[in-house]
Image 1 (tube, one colour):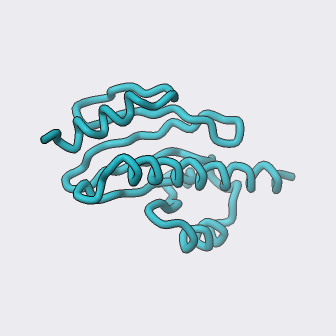
Image 2: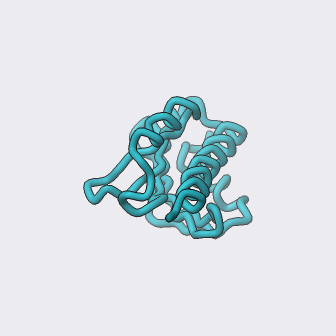
Image 3: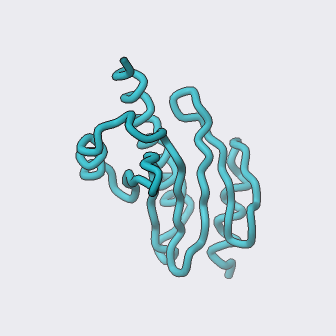
Length: 125
């Protein structure tokens, strides 16, 4: 039986997007979100597969809007780092991981990031 890292590695190598091996159990995935690069860090962390990407610089979206969106999507959510940058992140238990779940997880992460970027672009003054 394959390890979770081997399973994720095979899945990542099957994607048409740019994927790089960062370290054992860690990958970088480059996607397009609202016309801009979204650099997603994906890593096996203990019993979880974790993904995270910087979405927007500080101050472009009201934090209450991010909290509202956090209640709508499963598996992923918005957060801020110490600098105030908006991140999208999520975790999936390795025990629940299969191809469909991993595809859905990464798709939700991309959709969520795209939503925030499109909102920021539409509301720019």
